[in-house]
Image 1 (cartoon, rainbow, N blue to C red):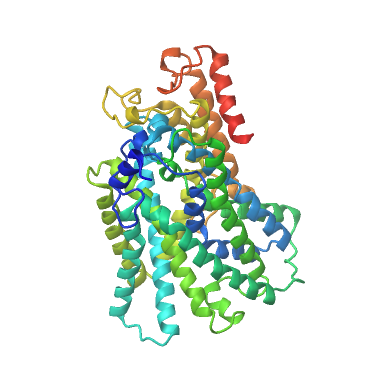
Image 2 (image 1 turned 180 degrees about the horizontal axis):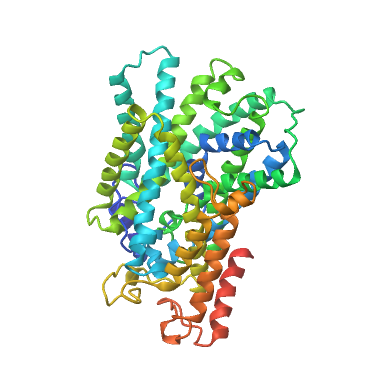
Length: 505
């Protein structure tokens, strides 16, 4: 039976496939909140049943790691999905996307740099990679089934891939929610079949090359950085949880978000590890043809195409929100379209004009982890110290009267923590483009995914508790729907611990 809340939701295109979502970075009022936390599982599952994890698993074998160590790393690196789930609880609390919530951490102006501009840049990088990979796999698929691919056809394939990648994001939250289980099922079937063939060809007697203990530790840390790059690129989890009711279980939000990303990431990466014992994973798209039946190879290529598109759906949706917050005062759907045009142009250059640009772009994505890790850590700590109390209406105020204007639009605890931790991370990274001096001293070990987030989160917490707003009771976070617990330090810490206990119980 229809309810007023459901009717309002339908008006805004939340529940109907093919209705363009009218909401953007603005506050979602309670009447439009609906659904269950379990729906988040399918959203994140569909975006992460992707070929990229298969490649990352193979890279661990290419590094020279034993199979058992590579499998352990696939689990440890993807534990960062728990942090992504933790961030998601701020969505129902505020009714706003991640990019708006981050104004609490950096200030209305500071967020332009450390939240909005950074989010647009990183989002477009990943979109270019997804569109490029999907186009290459589509061309290979057409050639495999005997279609002559002329330059004109290649341009047509690029156009179709771009439309599919960004078209679903244009329609928005409701369409993504409805299509996610379908995409997940199709991709899961493909990967199950691939697993059968990979395990059938696996070399279970495989032995990794012998290396010294010091070299092995360096490889382990580098492998951890590679596996952590997946979840560390998803600091936007509030975007997909903000339509849930404010009363939704925080524990459920964390659980379903984390599982939706972690389960496919671990399983598919592990499959890539096993495949690395049988084929050369330097070019798995070609090498995999040696161990699968002829009829399955086009299915495998289709899997790459569909996985790249579904991953791009979430990336494009969040990037559109970031662009809107940055200053594009137009409908959210149009920000997605504009980003799509930029990505299509960049992908065309990448595919047809710059043969070596892919390596440079990959390096830029690797370096982005040095920035995204600290950002996620600061965000996670902010959820804790503010007791997940966010005023969605106030967050949309960017004027000088905003409570998040702070000092001339900058919130220095967040700015300092971000700047210092990123600077330290750049000294530790080890990528194909750049190797930091600390990584060199450690024999190539990249410890930035461990050290930089810990430094960022710790420094932010220290500055938060020793400066504003903690020192001044009137400036501490309050919840307009919840009676304040009091002004004592004990009450602040007690509420924060209560939030943590609720999630981890």
